[in-house]
Amino acid sequence: MGAVVRRVTSDWAATLPGFGVLRSLHLVRRIGPVLQGVCLDRSTSGDGYFPTAHVHALTREFPVISLTLGHRLERPSAQPETVLFIRHEGEFRRAADALKAQSRLSLDAPPSLEDRQQ
Image: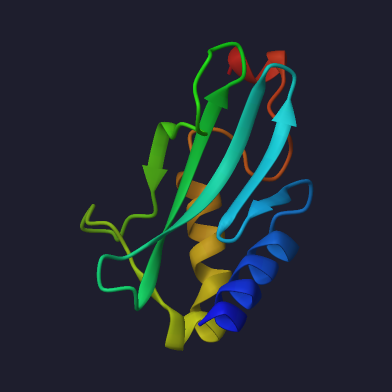
């Protein structure tokens, strides 16, 4: 499973330029005092993952990266969407595009102060 997890992490990192790999299944980029991230939370069965966009304020003392403003990829029915590891290759690009569209903050370009006014 380790090779599969590394491949999934690598594929998502290539899809999200500007984000670096923090650890397996977790990508981040620093924007001033904030980390913006994408966590690929493993499902309870371990056969897939839930793509989740989030932020973490570096101004707080906190022993782990929090998933503040966390937003899991959703189906049109508003249910969380799981990407199965066995279907990752065929589904991750669509899932990444959908997460980009659903994310409160842009996953393409780092947010700026001008974005706040829109």
